[in-house]
Image 1 (cartoon, rainbow, N blue to C red):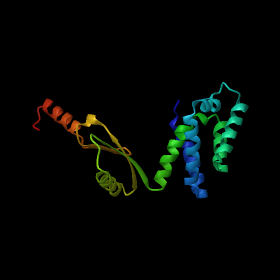
Image 2 (image 1 turned 60 degrees about the horizontal axis):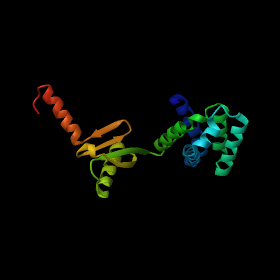
Image 3 (image 1 turned 60 degrees about the vertical axis):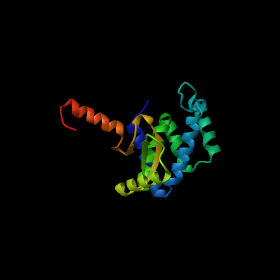
Length: 183
């Protein structure tokens, strides 16, 4: 069950500690490492998160995982706090929020580019640079293909969607014709 307020609050708290310590990137890597291990091993996730198991045993398992990963003392304490407060099941969402907040702090924006056909690397780089100029941030661009677009591209960066696909243009023309507007 998702609880965005809880996830955001804990992510912000860890980020504030990271800013004070100058360790936001280190904490980011530790949190990502722990979250990835848990999400890839469903049995391990159950052993830590399932309240039907004994809390002492679950905490022991979690402590063993933390030690084996060699996480920093702050992230270790943070994860144990999540466990003690019954919030460890929110770790995936907390990690996602932390990653976004750390990107914002570092001036990095995440964007996606969906095209109908594979684009040359030079074209992708030009689009990335244009988005970077537009936002004033470094842009990490995830490129995907969707043959349903017919042609053109759709770019998402945060809440902004730039839709230059032929499919959307055809849908807009159809709506205009239905309303009796000239195209």
